[in-house]
Image (cartoon, rainbow, N blue to C red):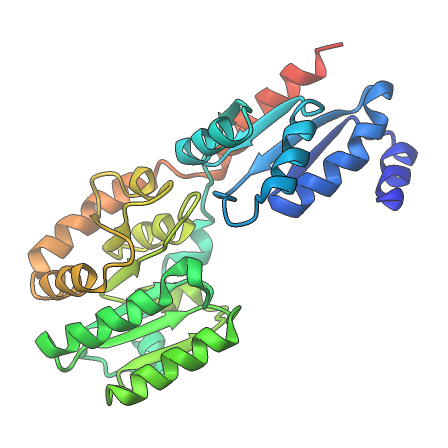
Length: 299
């Protein structure tokens, strides 16, 4: 923290903009020292932090709110979370997406990389292997859905944060006799090809401040199913299907129905493309720039 204070002071930083749980805490603690010299502090919130905010952390967060010149939330849900938990008013600046990273992929190349048959139905979850992302819900739903669609395949694309959870899921898949149908692809740099390979994206998260994977999937013309939690309903709008969290039966039914209804999936793709246009970095940057201008003018 002392190094950060020295850096801010040496470079005569005017605005300190911190992001997410720990940087918001430690960054603002350092910034508070230099506020008498005119430093402005912006705290950016990307998620619901109920799992991290114990009584002690909340006490610190509320004190830091008093030395924060502006707060930014990535969704109305996160803004409400801050207002309820900390009493802090945040401005809305939804995340944008880097379209060049997710569109223009090659379906056949993606399928080959995943070792999934070209003619199989493929449902994906994009996210870390952790409790938040509902990996267990996805696996149980996939097992149930294969009873309807025995040839379907399912893939989780993302780093492993919880090794124990991965081990449990692999054992459950083996027990169900579906080792060849439910895959864990790990981290991938070829996300455009991964998304192009999917017929459907499922995001059964338990909590989610925004849901970037949904905006990216819609931009890549992949229909989406998501938990009706946090910021995800706002991201999906009327373009996708919402389900209750922690309900593998509901997810299995939704996946099975959509895999059997190409016309509905095509309509969801059209709606999703329109919805994804809303999420661009130029708009987000413009909102942040206006906020910077406003707080910089305050003595």
